[in-house]
Image 1 (cartoon, helix red, strand yellow):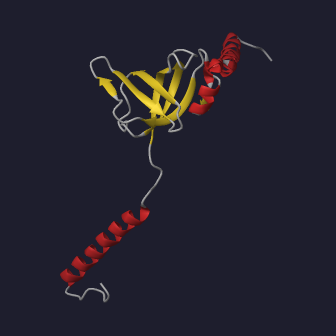
Image 2 (cartoon, helix red, strand yellow):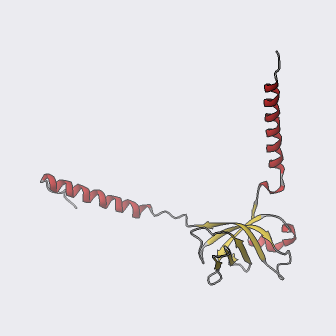
Image 3 (cartoon, helix red, strand yellow):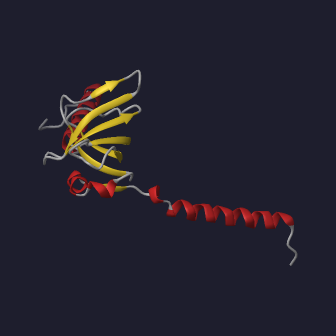
Length: 164
């Protein structure tokens, strides 16, 4: 079997792509770990210059949005005495508001949290309710179908079904 130049180039591209994928997979920040605020406060030195995610509630009255600079700052708490001052550059998610759950990805400004508990965020994700009120939606659908049925029966000159 003869090997031509195109096959060598193709094999080189495949091997190079595999090497790049392997290198990306071993990079330190290829995956970001989620921690609770209590875990961060327990050993902040572990988070020195590390990217991580933490979750909490946006405290009411702490949101400060500067639209011209696209800078958002707020306080986040876990309601157990662990709070962070969060600083974020960028446009916040549409559902972001005070009292809302939020997941923040970023780095600590300082590992001495009593001196400075600022978290420089690179990503904000809003946590929203997972409650889906299907009964309400189905009742509206049933009412709409019933109304459709009544109107159709009236057009055809029939009596609506008994019990409605």
